[in-house]
Length: 287
Image (cartoon, rainbow, N blue to C red; front, side, top):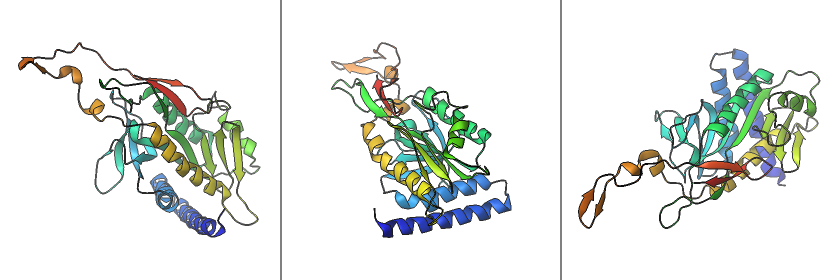
């Protein structure tokens, strides 16, 4: 542990939280947008290297399925490129192969806010399909172990007078039936209170250090978010943008110089995800 590095990060966190308090006091209808900017620019962006970037928008898959809008998508620049709607902002659609982490930002702790994040995340987890990043010499997709996007929740404020680590889990377990085995939201930060992370050993918790005014909960949230990115990216292999842009079965073929119009047997490649690890973030992908 490097005290100097931590001190600089903790100072940045304090500045970000001070900006959030100022924004909340105004009660502007675009408050969440401002809080999202604080998480991106004040907290996460300084921690990312050039391989990774962030934006707001919807996650899509090759079959045309599209998610609801997600506050923050962290994506790999080495995989499929997102499509931005404007060069002046980060609003985009993100192919799921490039999405490594999804974060919802909430101004306050409430069951309704947690339910909203849960519904968005479970829809991605259940409805969108990754394509294989590994193919044989005949270009047939091969079975592959992939890491699904990690789903995270950042909450700026909780008004619970008698906050305990158990109080969050008592709320979350009424929303997610798999809260203690394979939770959809596996990482939560309550600023100024504590952070929760689901691991192969179950839930772990780290509290805000009130005595020394050190935001251990946010430092932990940032560290875990960032250090998970390379492993998730590596698991995706080399996905093919062609699945999004072309339909092989509509192409023609030249055999011995003679044109054969659409000679391929009609069909559709299906990618099936099967969970293989209890922690809930790894899957076997079968083409």
